[in-house]
Structures are given as structure tokens and as C-alpha cells.
Image (cartoon, rainbow, N blue to C red; front, top):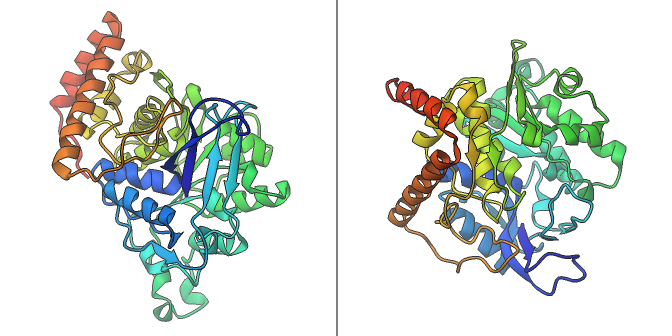
Length: 401
């Protein structure tokens, strides 16, 4: 959907103008993964209007395959407006205009299920389930387990059901999109139980499901997914695997420019490390590093740290990791892509198509700036510990995707 960001802080009723950007949890994840060098495909529906043109072009510029995005001539592209305030405050306002949109018409008949299931990982969001009954039916189909399909129907006549990728699901509870509190809680929980990997905020679990008592209580209420990641904001994250393992990692300190897009960036970082087969605690750290990159830019989407830099930082010992302090690192951090988000202080950069060579050059500057800032932000004791860990990591074989 197209996002309209306010030109200055204040109530929606008082903001005089807005800047256009793009929004969407799944597309944010796809763009971040593509910018990090992974092959990513975004599948959705948009209108045949100018907003749909902008969305498809902007997402494609990040390197995402948009060949399976369908255009709907009868329904518009969805839009939404939000205030500049933090989503966690009562002053934050969001106005969704998605009823009857092209995306709300996604269904098992209007979408290519074989294409959806063709990747190693299928990433979904609870937001989609809130758009329409057809969307909920589609989400139920995509999270349904077909391990015993041969006992119920001839799989040869259902080739789209022969293979199920790793199903990743971010709860992404948005009260403004739901009408019935009991219904939305049941839908979101049922979808989570069908997924293989679930991301949920500790606050989301309390608000949507009434589950309090911390990450362990959430795992007790949601034992089905092979992997569950409970996000705790500045306190870090806890991940559970199907063998009963529990892995907790604190979040590094970050200078927050805008608290938007961090959840999507965390999921993308975790998935990037998952695709590389890295250990679970490293996957959590990758999520934190990518989330910090998003927090330190004004828009929803930032350029992730390079693989080499992320590997170095994720390999730090516990003392050095706890002392990590990440900030903007320079005016170029997060730049280099299309107009995927602009801050509340003014309009974003002009829309343009960045060539691969230009993108790589900008990425090098971004990573150098972040690297320099990380070194400057550590005190002497932590800096020395980090150097020891970097030296050890550089003498080990780094896993490849």
C-alpha cells in the first residue's frame, strides 16, 4: 500500500501535508532481503492506478521480483496515513483506507499458489488476514499442513500442495484493521499454530491473546511452531526451537530516529541468517542488527549492514555485544535506494532508478559509516573485547548462503 507520512508532528487533523512512500510488512521484508543479496519475490495485488505503478516500480528497484504481482482494474491500491509519533504512544494515529482495495481481493482463486510456495521461505503477516474473508481463507490455506495429503486426496491433481516451504509468520497485530476482538485473536492464533516460524511481540501477545507472564508463557500458549521468536523491544528477544531450546539475546543500544519498520527489519535479518543456516542465537543478533539499521533512519526501510560486518558483530562475546551502541553513523546510512520512506521532517529524495553499480558504491559507504560509528561508540574495554572476537571470527570459515 502507499503510505502518507506527515510533513511535521501533530494530529492528523492538524498536519497540512504529507509525503508519499510505500508501506507493507511483507514488501519491507522482501526489499531488505533483496538488498542483502538474497533472491526475493513479492506477490500481491495492486490497482491499475498510479499508486500501483509506484509501488511495483519502487519495490522492483530494491531488486525484488515483482513478476507475480497482479493488477486489478476494478479495485484501487490501498493507502494509509499515519502521524509522526511513535506507534507505542497514545498520540499515534493511523488511518487505513484498504476496504475494497486490490489487496483485499487476494484469495485462493485469484493468487498463484504454486508461485507463492516456490521459495525456500514463505513469509506472511497477520495484517493480510485482517483485510477480508477471502484473505483469511488464503492465509489458512497457506499455513495448513498437508503432511497427510495422500490419505485425503490424490496429490497428483493438486501440484501446488506437493511442497510446503518454511512458513514464516509475523503476527503484526493492528487493532485498527480488526472489528471483533475475539475473532481477530482466534484468527491470528490459529494462523500462528500452522506456521513453522512465528514472530510475535510480547506486547502483541498480551493485547491480542491476553497472554502475560513473559516469553515462556507465550511459548506455553503457542507450542506448535517449530520456532517461536518473542520480541521484547529494547529488552531484546527470546527464541525457542522444536528441541526445547531457549535462546535469549539482548538488543544493542540504538539511537532511534524513527520507531517504524524495526519489526519487519528484525524478521528480515533473522530470515537472512536462517537461510544461511547460522545458529539460533546468531539469527537473533542478525535480527537486532537489521532492526537497529531501520531504527536509525527516518523511513520504514534501511539498507542492512553488509554480511561481513554483521558476521563480525554477531560473533562478539557477550560483554562486547552488550556494549554495542548503534546510531546513524553518518548522513548516508540507509540511503541508496528508491524513495521507500521519508521522514517527518521533510520530503524524501527524488524518485529515481539506482543502477547496480551505484547501489553497490552507496552500500559500501553505508557499511563503512556504520562500521566507523560502531567503533567510536564502544568504550575502550568493550572495544578491546570486540577486536579479539573480530580477529577470531576472521580466522574462521564464514558460512555461505
